[in-house]
Length: 262
Image (tube, rainbow, N blue to C red):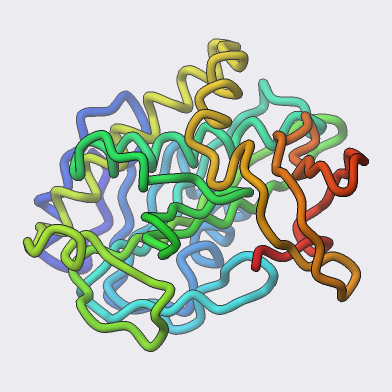
């Protein structure tokens, strides 16, 4: 493993992978692991599968431009650099599906099979109605292909208190404390398994599994659309990654900022 050492704890992160996490950069503190990983990629200093991980992220980014907050030293905050040049830009949501399923696999291995564990579109991890983790994937395109992807992941592990009631952690769910190094290694292994599935072209299985664990799938719930509250049934996700919702007998498709869960 090619390790840039910042703390001794990095020695304990030893994923059994071919390439994901084999180049590991540990930062005691940074603004954003996605930003750090992006700089490494631009400078051609990141190998395929390079992982940037930090103990304290001061300006983490989430979906919709939200800030991701995590207590220092208690959670996993990391970014993986992949080079999915095999994947057309038009199919980039397949990468989101693979990453979300990898984290669902990782959480299932820890919590056991549980119907409360779900992927909330596009790629948050929920337990019941509470958020366990989030994903932010930033792709750099070169023509019709993806040149490289920065996969940012934030997972609540040992944090017990949150400023909002909509967040939870492994420690809250199980009552146990976890080794962050061991959790990181397991996660990197899970990510690589799903990434290799995607690279092998087995996308039909990814799509079916994603829908099987999708939050609110085939259920009727309230949403906010164009400033109005509507009731609809979430019936799937199209190939472009848009959410498909049946509203008043009409099938409609929504991008991230066009619909809000209520």
